[in-house]
Length: 368
Ligand SMILES: Nc1ncnc2c1ncn2[C@@H]1O[C@H](COP(=O)(O)OP(=O)(O)OP(=O)(O)O)[C@@H](O)[C@H]1O
Image (cartoon, rainbow, N blue to C red):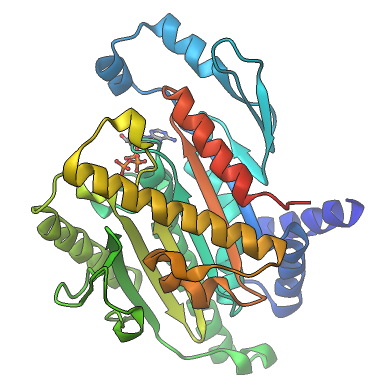
């Protein structure tokens, strides 16, 4: 515990000094901090009650105040939830962000993982939660919704951090510093994909699809080399448009599919994944195609939870149960790989929130 506190203090001093670039010995310290905290981490974020909720659910301010109190961040690692007629239940996570938390505060905890990717490790960050719980907001998946810089989610901030580091390395090369000999000139490569009903579609090349029954070994997403932030954002907008094109066959598909942004630098890969909404079948009261979708989503989300908990427990990892886990296998599996699950909660839906917390607790099962 004392070691963790010391590392945390050092980490904060380092981060307070420099935004994007860390000399080598400090990188080592940051990585030590991350390793000490564990390679699989779970954060929980509760979104605030919004004015649109009043319209959708027709409640009063007082009734929403009561609901908001039913889910409480007790401190920055504990959260309690109180369902009607049941005693409050408390859950522990690596970080808990309450409804007042800002995008800056969330990113302050995420940026160490982005640094770990820049140091050559595979990193995967997932946003999990029911539809409308804030996954897209937290992840910053939709370029069209990114307004002010302070409001931006993880994706644009991570892209900026990556280019900040690349620039830092280039500057060092120019200054001829010793450490810069290691600086890599590799370009950064980007691909964007979605998984819908266990089919993978390349959102930068719509012809590139792997359907449910096709083996993933035949699939390779288009990977485009980029040299600046603007190029990445242009590709993300293209992917967003392509997603809309693919969506015409199925309404509201964006919240029913997993969206995966991959950034590669050197040998390392950063996966930023906005998962499909995690609704349970009995609450959505659906039939036909919608029911099949929900079943496919549930199957892939539980395959993901199984994979992460098996990794934590060091037992056989069942990657083959969904396209999502097959696609990510090579990035999740190595010993230096880091995984973060951000579980988003909509305080209006207490039952769904409890299910999400149970999912999070399963993923977090072996945490110290
Ligand atoms: N922390 C937050 N602060 C303010 N507004 C938020 C926050 N989180 C989410 N919202 C708002 O709540 C609404 C739902 O969020 P969002 O679209 O991110 O949910 P989602 O889980 O991605 O849903 P879907 O599965 O439909 O994509 C949006 O209007 C979003 O701007």
